Image 1 (cartoon, rainbow, N blue to C red):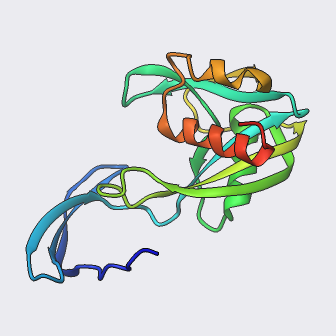
Image 2 (cartoon, helix red, strand yellow):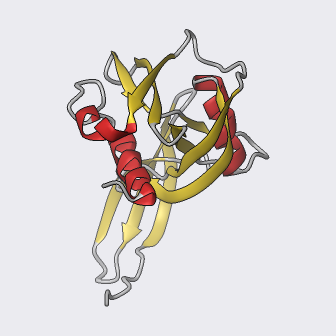
Length: 184
């Protein structure tokens, strides 16, 4: 059994830097032992995001290879994106599938909510597995077409050896999907 910690008191918070996509907030905190610290964090957009592990015919994982500005490289991963205003997470998941790899899903199962570096980022990502897929394409906002890559589900361990399959959220999503499918 774990003890529930008392959250620190926020004494002051202010945005200290902002771009088109990000806000950096400085937060002055007082902990229960009266120690005070200042932290900086990326403010979330409060909409959240989704990532989807598409499984075609129970045999193939569908991934996308797209440019990642943070690493200045092309990365292999599962479809993902922000939840639009007024949209539910499962709707965003199905939309992203159609925009990024040209498939929709008749069956979407929520697997888990993940955080990324919660000491610095407030954003959360909803992980789904998509099954009973059908061809359907929607126009996305990507600057170039995303290369769709089909990977045999039975060879999932080889996917972990791919140099461009390194994003922690995609690796986590893969293991969550395998657990759901009872294949790990």
